Image 1 (tube, chains in turn purple, orange):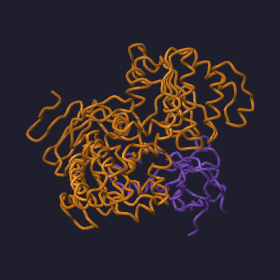
Image 2 (cartoon, one colour):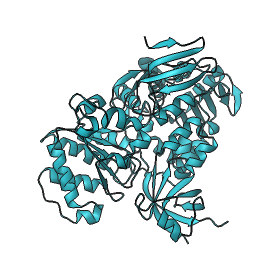
Image 3 (cartoon, rainbow over the protein chains, first blue to last red):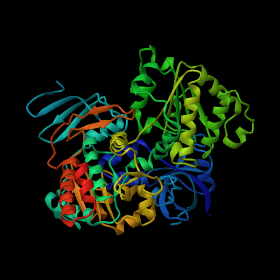
Image 4 (cartoon, chains in turn orange, green):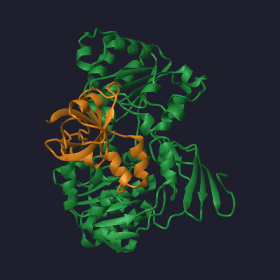
Amino acid sequence: MAETMLLIAGRTSKQGTSLNVGKLKDEYREVTSTVEMNALDMARMGLKEGDKVHLRTEIGETVVHCKSRKPEDLPLGMLFMAYGPPSSQLMHGDTAGTGMPISKNFLVEVSPVTP
Amino acid sequence: MSEGTKGENIKVVENATCTFCGCVCDDMNLTVDLDAHKITKAQNACVLGRAWFTEHVFEDRPYAFIDGKEATTAEAVEAAAHILAEARFPIIYGLSDTTCEAQRQAVAIADMIGGCLDTTTSVCHGPSGIAFEGNGESTATLGEIKNRADLIVFWGGNPAESHPRLFTRYALMPKGLHIPNGKKDRYAVLVDVRRTPSTPVADKFIQVKPGTDFEVLWALRALVKGKRVDPSIEQKTGVALETLADLAQRMKSCRFGALLFGMGLTMTRGRHFNSGALLALASDLNEFTHFVAKPVRGHGNVTGADNVVSWSTGFPFGINFGRGYPRFNPGEFTTVDTLSRGDADAALIIASDPASNFPKRAVEHLKRIPTIVLDTKASVTGQIAKVAFTTATYGINTPGTVYRMDDVAIALRPAFDSPYPSDEEVLTAIKNRVRELLAASGRAGAPAAQKVA
């Protein structure tokens, strides 16, 4: 069952250190292919640590692994991802005359990937 | 003297500069194994700086590629110059991870070819750049903040992960001239939509609902001016009126306040209006005390890009030279837009990886046009490039000038030489060849080129 959630993309320490190793290396790919979710949201959707989820917007889609965050650290319905190719797949190209696409705070459809 | 030898093949470089992030910390003590071409120790570096220095290796890469095939730098310069000289709407983008000297060459090329010139600022603090033009900037160096600020408000950022030494070297922990007890003498507020590793550092965490920063900032402006704010602000923003009133009072009564703001403001709903509201709040507060506002900048020389492009053209980013003089228009000449609309017919990308970080539609167009890439490492953009140069890493292999996020210029002290040319050398060679090609073809860009270069 798909749910609509709010995606925030941002920087993390691991993203910063892994890009020094190389953006085409496994470490960077793994860091940027992980989405953090509120643990209660994950439980409700029947997701376990590391399960794959499908993220989709009207622009594009991607499949990433989920990682739980304590409910007090990440609000219900909010997702966090490190910037990278997977998060970029979901961004709209319209900048509303500013040059800046909305990279934080946009709605995505989330659904578990069934094996 | 900043460097010395320690054993036959070990060199120590003192007070080297880290160019990983906009903090541009210039107190690095590097131990360099000259035989291995490796930095084995980076004293004073944060976790990001340590990775920047110690993960640096010469990858076994050709000097250049043309259509995926190995080429010499000279052959690649020739191919790149032809692409740029023959394009009708070329764009130049990136520039935030290279020296000011290289950035200057890129400006000259953009002027010659009548193209667009844009930097990663447009997808970083570009909205703040727009806001500066409307609101001005009550500013300070990080040194002033370190020595004077007794109230610091971090808004929409997570420095513990993105700029670790912003806390420890500049803005929170250090003791200063008028802050003798360091952190004990400062009150720190963190405003964000979620708890992050930065949250525990603050004395007060204010959690706003996503997309309501503008409303919170505007309410603070009203409270600072003694105006009434309706308690329903809490329902809208998630922040209680009492919390805002307390913050407004703290801001008015501090001796020296600083608002340090991140991309939590610029990349979300409101964009430049958010940055503008924050800058206006800082200006308002100067009626009561001394208050400054600074954007926290990401890449090592993104501030240099703003400075070089501004002093060369009058504008910081999103520029077009098509009419023979610079015009500034974010949304039209910024790179996400020129690519997403399909306007650009050639691209020169310097020290950046838009194919990895741009919206899908922009990347799809980038794949369709001839792209030239200068980068120190393999990247997604390098993989799709028609012409790709491997260049030396600024700060580690090449000298030059960079600007810290507070617009302070800092000289680089490289650790060891690279077999690859610098960005400046490659761009200068491209510029010289483009000039020849334009002159030979009699294109209108040639006179402008002679004037600028």
